[in-house]
Length: 159
Image (tube, rainbow, N blue to C red; front, side, top):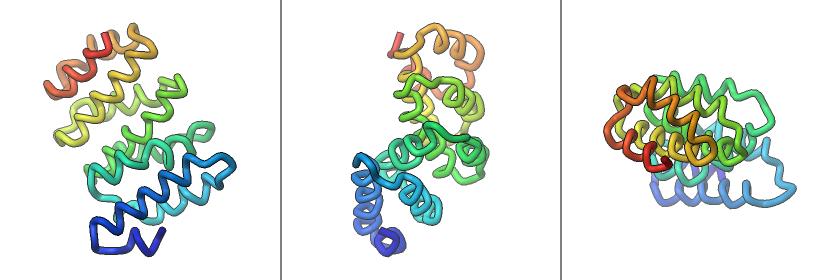
């Protein structure tokens, strides 16, 4: 996987990311090893589709029962791909109905200037709203004006 992720060819890196994702779906897999491969190659995972393909399972699923400081560090990064990775990894955490950290990440990223970050903030908020509409309503009342129009529409679609 690391040879594929080190490639300059988009397709080869996508194969590496896809292998990480497929392995992360396997029961009994060493999730720590997959996470470590991801983190060692984080700067090579630099398109929205690489991130969306595997971050929820490779990063989010691994961090489900662990401290999530790394997600907050990524959310505060100057690198837009790291910020998108932080909120996208949180999708799996939301799926587990654990909303505190994903909402805190949305707080950090609500005013993000990058469209490709905002789109996934909107998706995260939509999924939070499907689990707990009242918490989404509260977030939108406080921070809704900081979201892009697209993110706001996406978030409200859960209500």
